[in-house]
Length: 444
Image (cartoon, rainbow, N blue to C red; front, side, top):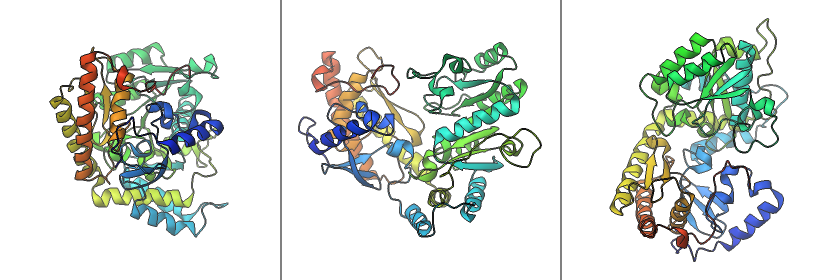
């Protein structure tokens, strides 16, 4: 483990690699959430490899990793069952001029796992499928506006969503005006929005659950609102898919959307996403209808055989090995340990663990109880010093009890420093550089 104090954890090779990344790649990473601005200054490790719940940086340090692959690697890195399925396809070719039989098998496996859906189409990333869902909703309703849940942080890299964020440069205002927002958990406010834009809203798109459980009756009420106002209900199940249940949040809560989108855990790190939903809607993107054609999804790499094989192996593993239950058990052990550690160090009101056990995040609050990037920086520095790489506390099933126990021990050490900073009412002496930054901000 990387057990040195953070002042001694110089990461010289990672620092050099980060400089090379920034010289060639805007932002220094291909995903903003992986950028070195998300980590303490000079403490952004560049990864060499991973296995199970552990990763190694190019400086030779080993870390217990959380939130692996932005929540996509839920079975752990290089999972044997997934890798075996992928290898079987690699020698057989990955992409052809006509559909592969693997596309049939993958669709059958997906629809058996998510029985609330009647048809499915695969792509490579989440933005592809959420934007396809929005386009389809607009086509079937003939309406221009998209209503997003304003409490949820991300839906797509495409203009209809990014225009609503602080990073809206390059997106016409006319596009932004077509996206409106509604608050999570508030049916009255949502109905008021639908009434204000009567017969203009094509769809309601939201994550069915995030760091809070849906209020009783909320999702069913949203289903009723969508039906009464003639709009399409879309569940973004990028995170909840598999982590909430094998069939996603819709399988857990028993509310069926018109369309839903899956990704992240679906491929255990391999690039695959899915748009699923009612046959009546999905067929509008096909050839068996008499209406105007909808350019639903048509991607060169959407049906790569090895990625679809990975998805099938992931779904089989989840069902046969009760992975969702394991994720919850691990998360409950971790959450209890972190909360106890924080409370014992007197920072229980400042380091706050939130979310479903399979999808834990943490908030760092200052002496006034306000979210603080400075205290987050302090906390992340101490975690890294203890060999814990944790932008969140999202677990993978590859973790074991020893990993959780070590994490809790490191958290306790971090909380001791946190307490000192709170007592001083100034975390600056413990930052050793600029604070970490939010992903969505107007200026670099």
